[in-house]
Length: 79
Image 1: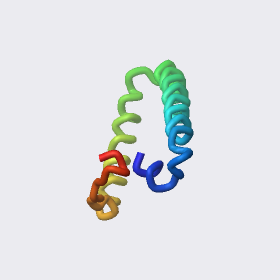
Image 2: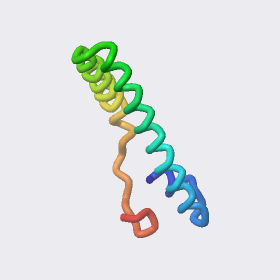
Image 3: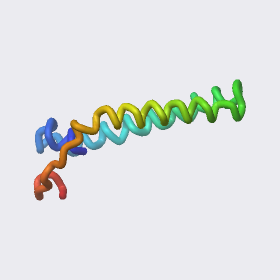
Image 4: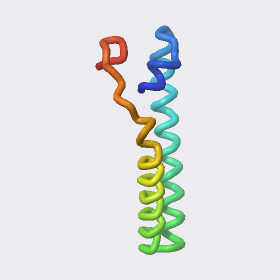
């Protein structure tokens, strides 16, 4: 949402939120189908793939922590 507030003009905000929701649904649906295929092929061993992905995400967040500065909130940004 922060990216929408910063990069989408106010008169196109509803369209931007719609696109964001649609893309989120497409990604979730695709991930669900893909995870079913992976589980069918590898069974419960797929847990280790998920754990590795979570570890990589944690490492990326740890490395990028200096970029996550506090942003002041205002009424225009919704908070």
